[in-house]
Image 1 (tube, rainbow, N blue to C red):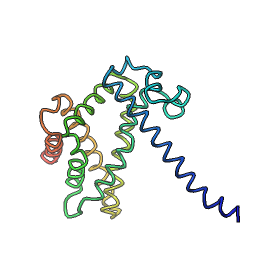
Image 2 (tube, helix red, strand yellow; image 1 turned 60 degrees about the vertical axis):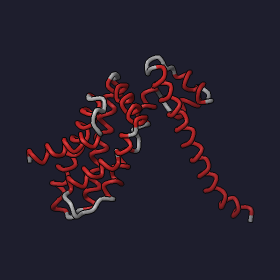
Image 3 (tube, helix red, strand yellow; image 1 turned 90 degrees about the vertical axis):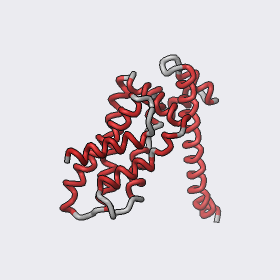
Image 4 (tube, helix red, strand yellow; image 1 turned 180 degrees about the vertical axis):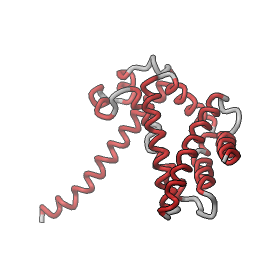
Length: 206
């Protein structure tokens, strides 16, 4: 009987531990980003982040290996969010339009003033750091793969896969360019406008 009770409790305990792990990771990332925005990326030390988050330096290194990891944590999971957003789209449109409309809906939060300020600050941190720039390229590759996977799920005909791969590549490129243009203009227009421009350029040239 005691063994059975232990077996029943184990998954619950594992679930609680995982929940606590995610909460701690998010708290550290939130704290790090807040300090970056307040004091500057270079001026913020790992010790300052650990102290503000209420953890030891050793605990910090259990979750993150560097300050760069904190910045990238804010981009973590975005590829999966893109995939889900595309899957919510109707197939009664072209694959390219499905990606465009999914990205417009997904990035609607960029129009919030506080979110816009935060996203631009993160973009500046990344542009000023060579390590972050290199690792950002990996994130873009993951996003492109997520787009392709979603499109293949929506249009599963094998003969369409080469064309869908091209759509995924163009869409990922359009998204990157929209972010660059939006950041360079300091958000003078809604982010959706930059997305629409980039996707319109693709249609015009193809």
